[in-house]
Length: 293
Image 1 (tube, rainbow, N blue to C red):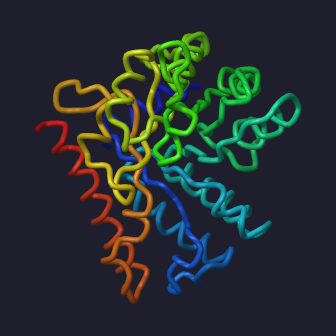
Image 2: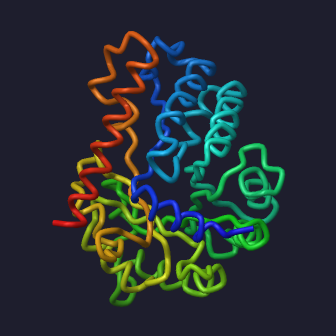
Protein backbone atom coordinates (compact mmCIF):
# COMPACT_ATOMS: atom_id res chain seq x y z
CA UNK A 1 0.00 0.00 0.00
CA UNK A 2 1.50 3.33 -1.05
CA UNK A 3 1.06 6.45 1.05
CA UNK A 4 -0.77 9.65 0.12
CA UNK A 5 2.39 11.70 -0.45
CA UNK A 6 3.80 9.12 -2.86
CA UNK A 7 0.53 8.85 -4.80
CA UNK A 8 0.18 12.61 -5.04
CA UNK A 9 3.79 13.18 -6.07
CA UNK A 10 3.58 10.53 -8.78
CA UNK A 11 0.30 11.99 -10.05
CA UNK A 12 1.65 15.54 -10.18
CA UNK A 13 4.74 14.40 -12.07
CA UNK A 14 2.48 12.78 -14.65
CA UNK A 15 -0.29 15.37 -14.96
CA UNK A 16 1.01 18.61 -13.45
CA UNK A 17 -0.03 20.40 -10.23
CA UNK A 18 -3.60 21.39 -11.08
CA UNK A 19 -6.29 20.08 -8.72
CA UNK A 20 -9.89 20.33 -9.94
CA UNK A 21 -12.35 21.47 -7.31
CA UNK A 22 -15.87 20.02 -7.34
CA UNK A 23 -17.99 22.90 -6.06
CA UNK A 24 -21.67 22.69 -7.05
CA UNK A 25 -22.67 26.21 -6.03
CA UNK A 26 -26.37 26.75 -5.42
CA UNK A 27 -28.17 27.58 -8.65
CA UNK A 28 -25.15 27.00 -10.92
CA UNK A 29 -25.50 23.35 -11.93
CA UNK A 30 -26.88 23.43 -15.49
CA UNK A 31 -30.43 22.32 -16.20
CA UNK A 32 -28.80 19.93 -18.67
CA UNK A 33 -27.95 17.72 -15.68
CA UNK A 34 -31.10 18.31 -13.65
CA UNK A 35 -30.21 21.63 -12.03
CA UNK A 36 -29.72 22.27 -8.33
CA UNK A 37 -31.00 18.94 -7.05
CA UNK A 38 -29.20 16.00 -5.49
CA UNK A 39 -29.48 13.99 -8.69
CA UNK A 40 -28.52 16.97 -10.81
CA UNK A 41 -25.41 17.53 -8.71
CA UNK A 42 -24.51 13.85 -8.94
CA UNK A 43 -24.82 13.73 -12.73
CA UNK A 44 -22.88 16.98 -13.06
CA UNK A 45 -20.13 15.74 -10.74
CA UNK A 46 -19.82 12.43 -12.57
CA UNK A 47 -19.51 14.28 -15.89
CA UNK A 48 -16.83 16.50 -14.38
CA UNK A 49 -14.93 13.44 -13.13
CA UNK A 50 -14.99 11.98 -16.66
CA UNK A 51 -13.33 15.14 -17.97
CA UNK A 52 -10.78 15.39 -15.15
CA UNK A 53 -9.64 11.76 -15.40
CA UNK A 54 -6.43 11.59 -17.39
CA UNK A 55 -5.95 15.36 -17.23
CA UNK A 56 -5.21 15.91 -13.54
CA UNK A 57 -4.09 13.81 -10.60
CA UNK A 58 -6.88 14.67 -8.19
CA UNK A 59 -10.19 16.33 -7.47
CA UNK A 60 -11.25 18.30 -4.40
CA UNK A 61 -14.97 18.07 -3.59
CA UNK A 62 -16.27 20.78 -1.24
CA UNK A 63 -18.46 18.91 1.24
CA UNK A 64 -20.57 21.93 2.19
CA UNK A 65 -22.12 22.20 -1.26
CA UNK A 66 -23.37 18.63 -0.92
CA UNK A 67 -24.44 18.82 2.73
CA UNK A 68 -26.88 21.65 1.91
CA UNK A 69 -28.91 19.16 -0.16
CA UNK A 70 -29.45 16.76 2.72
CA UNK A 71 -29.21 12.95 2.47
CA UNK A 72 -29.48 13.02 -1.31
CA UNK A 73 -26.61 15.47 -1.53
CA UNK A 74 -24.43 13.31 0.67
CA UNK A 75 -25.30 10.26 -1.44
CA UNK A 76 -24.24 12.27 -4.48
CA UNK A 77 -20.93 13.10 -2.79
CA UNK A 78 -20.30 9.42 -2.08
CA UNK A 79 -21.14 8.47 -5.67
CA UNK A 80 -18.82 11.12 -7.09
CA UNK A 81 -15.92 10.11 -4.84
CA UNK A 82 -16.38 6.47 -5.85
CA UNK A 83 -16.49 7.40 -9.53
CA UNK A 84 -13.33 9.48 -9.14
CA UNK A 85 -11.40 6.72 -7.42
CA UNK A 86 -12.60 4.18 -10.01
CA UNK A 87 -11.27 6.55 -12.69
CA UNK A 88 -7.83 6.65 -11.07
CA UNK A 89 -8.18 10.09 -9.50
CA UNK A 90 -7.12 10.93 -5.97
CA UNK A 91 -9.84 12.49 -3.83
CA UNK A 92 -8.97 15.32 -1.46
CA UNK A 93 -12.09 16.03 0.59
CA UNK A 94 -12.48 19.70 1.48
CA UNK A 95 -14.51 19.40 4.70
CA UNK A 96 -12.37 21.42 7.16
CA UNK A 97 -13.22 19.19 10.08
CA UNK A 98 -11.98 20.05 13.55
CA UNK A 99 -13.24 18.74 16.88
CA UNK A 100 -12.12 16.84 19.94
CA UNK A 101 -12.13 13.24 21.13
CA UNK A 102 -14.75 10.84 19.86
CA UNK A 103 -16.29 13.47 17.55
CA UNK A 104 -13.00 13.81 15.67
CA UNK A 105 -12.79 10.02 15.58
CA UNK A 106 -16.14 9.95 13.83
CA UNK A 107 -15.11 12.50 11.23
CA UNK A 108 -11.82 10.70 10.60
CA UNK A 109 -13.50 7.32 10.18
CA UNK A 110 -16.13 8.75 7.81
CA UNK A 111 -13.51 10.00 5.34
CA UNK A 112 -10.23 8.16 6.02
CA UNK A 113 -11.37 4.84 7.48
CA UNK A 114 -10.84 1.52 5.71
CA UNK A 115 -14.57 1.23 4.99
CA UNK A 116 -15.28 4.96 4.77
CA UNK A 117 -18.60 5.84 3.13
CA UNK A 118 -17.00 9.01 1.70
CA UNK A 119 -13.67 7.34 1.00
CA UNK A 120 -11.00 9.95 0.40
CA UNK A 121 -7.25 10.02 0.05
CA UNK A 122 -7.00 13.05 2.32
CA UNK A 123 -9.21 15.55 4.15
CA UNK A 124 -8.82 19.17 5.17
CA UNK A 125 -8.75 19.80 8.92
CA UNK A 126 -8.77 22.88 11.14
CA UNK A 127 -6.00 22.90 13.80
CA UNK A 128 -7.18 25.88 15.84
CA UNK A 129 -8.69 23.78 18.64
CA UNK A 130 -5.28 22.23 19.24
CA UNK A 131 -2.98 19.51 17.98
CA UNK A 132 -4.90 16.77 19.80
CA UNK A 133 -7.80 17.32 17.40
CA UNK A 134 -5.57 16.13 14.54
CA UNK A 135 -4.61 12.84 16.16
CA UNK A 136 -7.56 10.71 14.94
CA UNK A 137 -6.80 11.80 11.38
CA UNK A 138 -3.07 11.21 11.82
CA UNK A 139 -3.64 7.65 13.07
CA UNK A 140 -5.70 6.77 10.02
CA UNK A 141 -3.21 8.46 7.73
CA UNK A 142 -0.52 6.18 9.15
CA UNK A 143 -2.61 3.02 9.12
CA UNK A 144 -4.48 3.45 5.84
CA UNK A 145 -2.01 5.35 3.66
CA UNK A 146 -4.03 8.57 3.80
CA UNK A 147 -3.17 12.26 4.16
CA UNK A 148 -4.31 15.16 6.30
CA UNK A 149 -4.47 18.71 4.99
CA UNK A 150 -4.11 21.33 7.71
CA UNK A 151 -5.27 24.94 7.42
CA UNK A 152 -2.26 27.23 7.89
CA UNK A 153 -2.57 30.43 5.78
CA UNK A 154 -5.87 30.46 3.93
CA UNK A 155 -6.89 32.47 0.85
CA UNK A 156 -9.95 34.32 2.19
CA UNK A 157 -9.72 38.06 3.02
CA UNK A 158 -10.63 37.44 6.68
CA UNK A 159 -7.64 35.13 7.13
CA UNK A 160 -5.68 38.13 8.40
CA UNK A 161 -8.07 38.60 11.35
CA UNK A 162 -6.33 35.84 13.30
CA UNK A 163 -3.70 34.12 11.17
CA UNK A 164 -1.58 37.27 10.83
CA UNK A 165 -1.62 38.19 14.53
CA UNK A 166 1.85 38.70 16.01
CA UNK A 167 2.85 35.93 18.42
CA UNK A 168 6.21 36.85 19.86
CA UNK A 169 7.74 38.12 16.65
CA UNK A 170 6.09 35.70 14.24
CA UNK A 171 2.55 35.62 12.83
CA UNK A 172 0.25 32.92 14.13
CA UNK A 173 0.23 31.00 10.84
CA UNK A 174 4.00 30.50 11.12
CA UNK A 175 3.59 29.23 14.70
CA UNK A 176 1.04 26.74 13.40
CA UNK A 177 3.45 25.54 10.71
CA UNK A 178 6.20 25.19 13.32
CA UNK A 179 3.92 23.28 15.69
CA UNK A 180 3.17 20.81 12.89
CA UNK A 181 6.81 19.78 12.43
CA UNK A 182 6.62 16.61 14.58
CA UNK A 183 3.52 15.41 12.73
CA UNK A 184 5.13 16.30 9.40
CA UNK A 185 8.09 14.07 10.30
CA UNK A 186 5.81 11.33 11.60
CA UNK A 187 4.00 11.15 8.25
CA UNK A 188 7.11 11.32 6.07
CA UNK A 189 7.05 9.22 2.93
CA UNK A 190 9.98 7.51 1.20
CA UNK A 191 9.21 9.81 -1.74
CA UNK A 192 10.72 12.71 0.22
CA UNK A 193 7.48 14.52 1.06
CA UNK A 194 5.18 14.21 4.05
CA UNK A 195 1.58 13.02 3.91
CA UNK A 196 0.83 16.05 6.05
CA UNK A 197 -0.26 18.79 3.68
CA UNK A 198 -0.68 22.47 4.52
CA UNK A 199 -3.26 24.85 3.07
CA UNK A 200 -1.51 28.01 1.89
CA UNK A 201 -3.62 30.31 -0.26
CA UNK A 202 -2.59 31.43 -3.73
CA UNK A 203 -3.54 35.01 -2.84
CA UNK A 204 -0.68 35.19 -0.28
CA UNK A 205 2.54 34.38 -2.21
CA UNK A 206 4.94 36.02 0.27
CA UNK A 207 3.36 34.12 3.15
CA UNK A 208 3.61 30.92 1.08
CA UNK A 209 7.36 31.41 0.79
CA UNK A 210 7.59 31.90 4.54
CA UNK A 211 5.62 28.75 5.24
CA UNK A 212 7.82 26.82 2.80
CA UNK A 213 10.90 27.95 4.72
CA UNK A 214 9.28 26.79 7.98
CA UNK A 215 7.96 23.52 6.49
CA UNK A 216 10.30 22.31 3.75
CA UNK A 217 8.93 18.74 3.69
CA UNK A 218 5.18 19.43 3.78
CA UNK A 219 3.06 19.24 0.69
CA UNK A 220 0.98 22.36 -0.01
CA UNK A 221 -2.64 22.68 -1.10
CA UNK A 222 -2.92 26.09 -2.77
CA UNK A 223 -6.53 27.30 -3.26
CA UNK A 224 -7.43 30.58 -4.93
CA UNK A 225 -6.15 30.08 -8.49
CA UNK A 226 -8.57 31.28 -11.13
CA UNK A 227 -11.81 32.81 -9.91
CA UNK A 228 -10.29 34.17 -6.67
CA UNK A 229 -7.82 36.18 -8.72
CA UNK A 230 -4.40 34.64 -8.05
CA UNK A 231 -2.17 34.44 -11.10
CA UNK A 232 -0.10 31.33 -11.85
CA UNK A 233 3.18 32.68 -10.51
CA UNK A 234 1.59 33.61 -7.19
CA UNK A 235 -0.10 30.22 -6.99
CA UNK A 236 3.24 28.45 -7.42
CA UNK A 237 5.15 30.64 -4.94
CA UNK A 238 5.36 27.97 -2.24
CA UNK A 239 5.96 24.98 -4.50
CA UNK A 240 9.33 23.73 -5.72
CA UNK A 241 10.55 23.96 -9.31
CA UNK A 242 12.66 21.00 -10.38
CA UNK A 243 13.72 21.32 -13.99
CA UNK A 244 10.61 21.93 -16.06
CA UNK A 245 8.15 20.57 -13.50
CA UNK A 246 6.76 21.44 -10.07
CA UNK A 247 6.73 19.38 -6.89
CA UNK A 248 5.63 19.92 -3.32
CA UNK A 249 1.89 20.25 -3.71
CA UNK A 250 -1.05 21.15 -5.89
CA UNK A 251 -2.89 24.29 -7.00
CA UNK A 252 -6.67 24.15 -6.88
CA UNK A 253 -9.10 25.77 -9.29
CA UNK A 254 -12.86 25.40 -8.84
CA UNK A 255 -15.31 27.88 -10.33
CA UNK A 256 -13.09 28.69 -13.33
CA UNK A 257 -13.12 25.03 -14.39
CA UNK A 258 -16.52 24.01 -12.99
CA UNK A 259 -18.50 26.80 -14.65
CA UNK A 260 -16.51 28.33 -17.54
CA UNK A 261 -18.45 30.87 -19.58
CA UNK A 262 -17.94 28.74 -22.69
CA UNK A 263 -19.99 25.93 -21.10
CA UNK A 264 -23.00 28.07 -20.21
CA UNK A 265 -24.88 27.52 -23.45
CA UNK A 266 -23.99 23.88 -24.00
CA UNK A 267 -26.91 21.94 -25.44
CA UNK A 268 -25.49 18.48 -24.76
CA UNK A 269 -23.39 16.84 -22.09
CA UNK A 270 -20.67 16.24 -24.66
CA UNK A 271 -20.53 19.92 -25.60
CA UNK A 272 -20.41 20.87 -21.91
CA UNK A 273 -17.57 18.41 -21.30
CA UNK A 274 -15.64 19.81 -24.26
CA UNK A 275 -15.88 23.32 -22.80
CA UNK A 276 -14.83 22.17 -19.33
CA UNK A 277 -11.95 20.17 -20.80
CA UNK A 278 -10.72 23.31 -22.55
CA UNK A 279 -10.95 25.28 -19.28
CA UNK A 280 -8.94 22.63 -17.42
CA UNK A 281 -6.35 22.54 -20.19
CA UNK A 282 -6.06 26.35 -20.10
CA UNK A 283 -5.56 26.32 -16.31
CA UNK A 284 -2.89 23.63 -16.65
CA UNK A 285 -1.16 25.58 -19.42
CA UNK A 286 -1.06 28.73 -17.30
CA UNK A 287 0.72 26.87 -14.52
CA UNK A 288 3.11 25.17 -16.96
CA UNK A 289 4.04 28.50 -18.55
CA UNK A 290 4.71 30.01 -15.12
CA UNK A 291 7.11 27.16 -14.30
CA UNK A 292 9.21 27.71 -17.41
CA UNK A 293 9.00 31.54 -17.50
